[in-house]
Length: 238
Image (cartoon, rainbow, N blue to C red):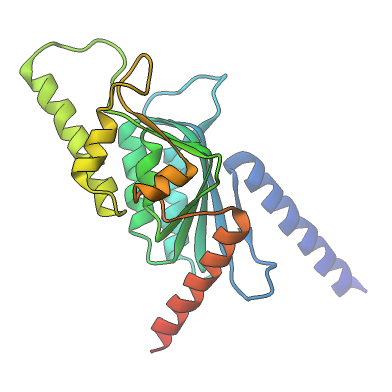
């Protein structure tokens, strides 16, 4: 009887841990799929927070919490793949690129799903996975890099902006099918956004432009990740 009680208590503790992790970090491990695959779910929501706090009223993704978690996933024998759910307005450029680089360097299969939007620096994160989906009503905003606060009007400032933009453009174009020339065209469009330059692309348009792989929802994203996990396991066996 005591063994059964211990098992029950362990199960309750495990559930409590998962619930707390989901509430605090928007992360959970999916392992009840019948395929013996453990999928780690990560959500990128609201504003991607950098070195400064975004504010108490903002929904944020904290990169300083996410980077260690991604490192832990890479080193874990229990996690088979990673699913990223994105609904972000963008945010800190350096933090967003750091997340994108970490995701793209994972050896485990990864799939992203854009829900709502993946704007600005959210674009590199969305394309950093092995395969990407977007729902039909999802959107992506592509625009040049911007900076808040005081800007010193000297050539060095312009060169810095240009270098940062080239890093973003280079990453995006190396992780999806869109060309550098076409991406810069969309980025510098002047007739779409009323108070800014750039483009707003809806679900199918992102696929047509070669940024996102496919239109789909959660069922397609999970199924694709299971497929990639199986392929990865077969390659390891060989």
